[in-house]
Image 1 (cartoon, rainbow, N blue to C red):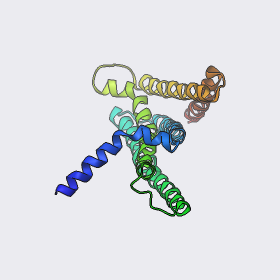
Image 2: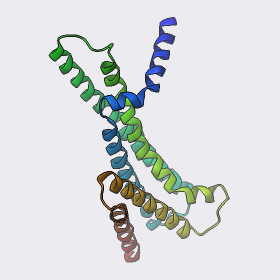
Image 3: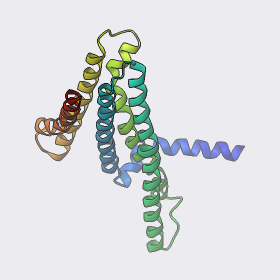
Length: 209
């Protein structure tokens, strides 16, 4: 029992140094890419679920919320968090072993070894946040209606949620523009345009029906 508690305390100490370890292994850029990629995927898939349900004639607010949040959290946990953690862990441990072979000594108790074990968690957390949290924010108009705070027609609520998701896509583009040194506004409009294309496609499908 004492050993278990000691390991738990040690793990918490290492988690406190996540940012430091990420800087040592230059993992912040990887976490940033995973966050952006999964945010983009999560928002576009959520737009598809939202508008697809509307075209199918869904009238239950709870069904919209359940479909979007269920899909996004499933993507966020299993793909965004678990899959990213496992793949990143494998890569970091591989690098650790190769470095140990090159230096002809174990490095598991060094700061490099600790970083190699902890950094996969840092990357996977950001990856999961991107896939799960942003789509959940996207359906905030529907959530407010469910709580009785907002009153509007189903059409208004659906397109308001779609608008929030488009705004999030725009902000992701702005963020990418700042990172790349491009015009943030142009970069934001570029990513929002992809979302708008999805909205336009589903709108045309709805008209065709």
